[in-house]
Length: 559
Image (cartoon, rainbow, N blue to C red):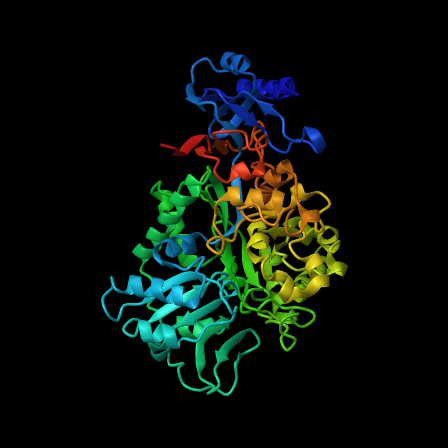
């Protein structure tokens, strides 16, 4: 097989005149990726020749040296390279904003949350907005949503807005609600069909706003300046590259965000490959998707390939739309953010524009609605399947719908660390029967390498090592529970790596040019200090990233 790759590269070399500068990567093991199925899925070579940002040849060092006598040589210092790791679901700008906000992840009590916010408030001028992210009431005792009173008493002089870890709920203090004019008693918790304002005994807002109700408070926050937005993108990029990520699927960007990324790219400041999905809604129409930059430059570092839609909320805030009531709240079935007609219209708009619909669906009801919409659109347009419509999260799927993903050609875009974060309370939410269809990586794809894996950063850490570990062990970083939360869904290391490489590229309809290290493919590499395919998965969590290489150029090098 190595001879075949070398022959192909020799033909390509003969046709390329005059020759541009080439780069030879050597002194390491280089995995070519999920080339075949089964045991031979991940062949490796000792050197890689790159020209114009693409792989020209892969094989033995001596053969490649003979092919390119005059080239730049990059020493991998004994490292082990995989095809560049990708995150198939993240929020680029939100990650940068989260890096500047109060970090509330891991707060074990409401009192700890208040203490962290109060400490940050002490450094800010009175009246300035204070934002935070990452709280999870499921970690508290009792695991109940908070009331704003304690937060408002501790921080009276700053409007405070704190996002729940899943981004589908907000906690606001009295100052923020006063500015938003939502502090008065309400007749109902409902905000349309897709939002809730939690009320106390006096029918006043508790400070917790869920899904579409969040906008009632968020509209009072001054919009960020363009300079602030640029800073957030660049902050996020630095972290993503240091973690070994070569590409991200940015799920839900607005037109101004796209314009900012284009400007960064033109200035040479955008370095991580960004596959963007425009933020869509029930009002999506043809004008919203007209004139989008499908790609920017020959390096294809930036392009818009689809539209992100929301069918429901999140499981942790009981906003996920379920077919039957929550096991731990028999009065509630979750929230539908796009009804059947609106969802079908939005999917049709995407299809007519040649853009992928990528629909957030957490609960089994939402997943069924999305699959139904895909099925109806497929009956109308024969080519719809070729768009590879995506279901983002596919977190809880009814048994009757497991096989529909492959039957409809729908991509299951999933996040392994959601399973390990949710495991303490997911069974209580869903009950013993529905949990079988939750985080069901193996059940939704006969070949797990065809899944698309990501993290949903900043909901979860963008670190792909955490995602790989969760996919293979279905356990927390400390190794618990022994055997995994859902042991029958655990993947092999090569299956998990494939879902973070070729599977992610396939989800963006780019598997003909990314996700492998074969001739003609983009020279995107993630280089580790040791071989992850030979290490115990527990060792992955501390495995150093040595290089992040994009289009044959080093975008990050460890000190």
